[in-house]
Image 1 (cartoon, rainbow, N blue to C red):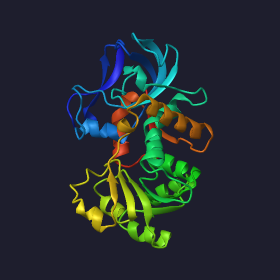
Image 2: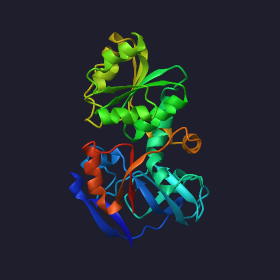
Image 3: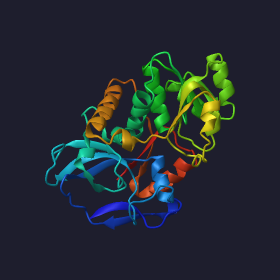
Length: 323
């Protein structure tokens, strides 16, 4: 048997139950992974509450982890039994053992520990596509990063600094401002209400070419008002709730702006793109340009407590669950 956190009905953290489930068998193209660490992400909350539609109920949430391949099904070429692997994407992570499509696994370099990998795959590859593909950040750029002291935010601050950019990090407290600055943010702004005025002051009126916004409803308008003409609004999450419907003529009146709502799933849908994103991430982590902050660990059976901490903004950096 395997242990897993299962959700039978949508709701608060209390709906997550620690249960025995049969150990799954890998089918064609699949691998069985004994998990050493599982990543905690805000998307887990969205699936638990029903904001994002579950594939089926009862549901095992969780989309990131690292461990060792213990069995493979037929026609598996990307990994073998005994490989250290990590993944981000396919749901089903809150379990001691899980089956996963083998083409979604990447081999983990020996230099990167399991807990680090579980803390960085989803958040790190998100940072990778945002900074390297959605808007290719270059030396000399000034950019805005919301939730700059969160898991993705701390990675983005470090990586953008490594690329030669100036980061304006938006945070919710003085403590988080200090954390963001310690990880590469040149400027910090507490609360989004004053963001456009601060961006105007910092940039001498030029504003910024891109805003990365994972907060959603509460920050969208302030983000839009921080962009330079032809700027790109990247809305990649909604921690404060979904952004209400937008009148797209506003994009014209505010400077022929661009707006995108990207996902990691699209950017890593092709195996080659997944391998490139992971390799890029492993490279900056191995070089020390990006340090992964595992600031909280919980036992997997205590996932409800981890969700409470995450939703009440008590966490910083990354959180991992230990099976």
